[in-house]
Length: 338
Image (tube, rainbow, N blue to C red; front, side, top):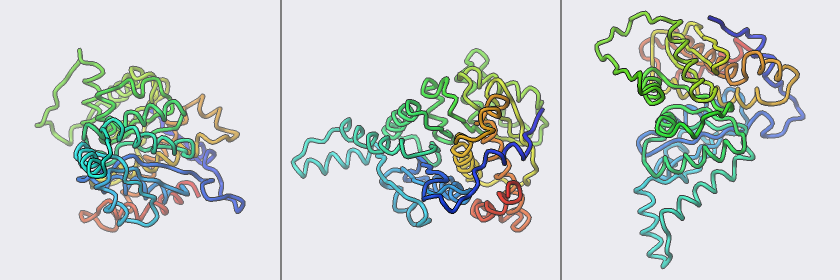
């Protein structure tokens, strides 16, 4: 059982400088947002900005774009992913223009548009609010493969984990990836990876049951190994982070209140830290060898999220929402690292 000293995290955070230009402190992209779910990509993106990234792009479906744009003028929103219904509508419009658009051709243009940005980005956050439309999933799978080829660090959460559960080869062996499953997402991925040990969830299980932490740590380590040392961050009472070679836990006290969107804050924070910690620095090589850069980034993200939860709960109690946590990001960061 081991935590990570704050001094190690601080040594990897780049200092601000008056000589920097826009983008020096990071360009991050969130791949997510659908007709039904528009809050997730906003929470992840705005957290990334408040942690300290200079620019955040949101690549979402066409139907989600207007809503996400309305939440904040600080986010750069690209409503270009297309669901099956949106592609059908686009084909119908093309016929009116006497053009012969096909679903394959439209999807190719979407993927080319998004992947053209990868060389400019320091990190991807894939999954918040993405939904499970088969055409969107197909587009995102191709984006993940392109990001892997270009060695762009990735945080995969929420519906991005659904994609990985269906197609584990997309990330297998990619040590630039950190996945952040909650209890149920971990269970689904575990059953997919180890079908011979498949277990069914117990809906009657006491939520206050004390789990065997050592066993949970071993399960996370085992999953990472099976995925080729992809870093796995299992969210829970104790956040457990492992790359199969090293395992750490974050047990900083948050609060007893859980809100939808808290995981999006975590993924946004990790996205920035993963970008920063992959920059060249005197300590990077040593820390990567001794612990693992994605583990340190995941741990830093957990600290921020738990501190935001604690600060917001102290003010709002049961009425606390994710937006209340967002308001505490800067204070939480300064309490640890400034």
